[in-house]
Length: 246
Image (cartoon, rainbow, N blue to C red):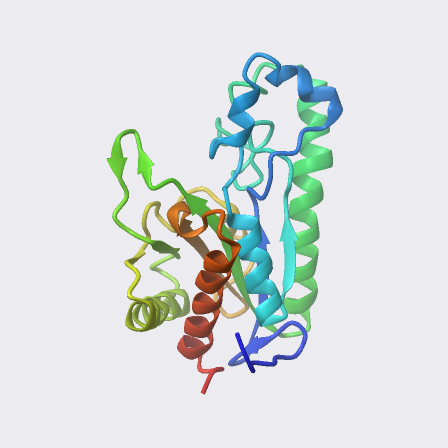
């Protein structure tokens, strides 16, 4: 964002931003590589990671000078965005692992990542700061033969007034200046099982606002300049919708 300088851990209005990316990569600890010997190509697909999401998250965090956390281990081993009670937290590749291996993944991947994010949020809420958590994801343009009719999805809890207000304003700003198709609580529901949903159970709406940002992968192609432009446009819209860009 040319000419836009913000302090570290940028403030949009009176809110501190934390950026996360739960499906950032397709890394596999050496001890589990055997699980994918019969189907190595799956690790290059969206099933293994949110393609383009990490680059977008990095750009957003850099522009906003916000804290960034990401989980680079493939979700085909363990999904850092799901609760441990969710049957899909382990995929068909890892579901049949012995209990000791599952506990290793929970401790060294899942909890290691989520604890670092939670510690950051906890420290800031204790100092009376309001956290705006941007959880960055991407979605496939076509799923099961059906085309998704959105470029960006903004997921939030409709019961949280400030989350709804920011998402509505952000949708308007994005559509006004970019011409992109922006939908709220699409292609998933903001109350569905996810990291932001879990954090809402810990922190009330006076201290924590969680938005999951879903970018259509068609926007985040191999052209890094195009992806950066999308991220920059998102940041401008966010600053405008929160009043910090005035």
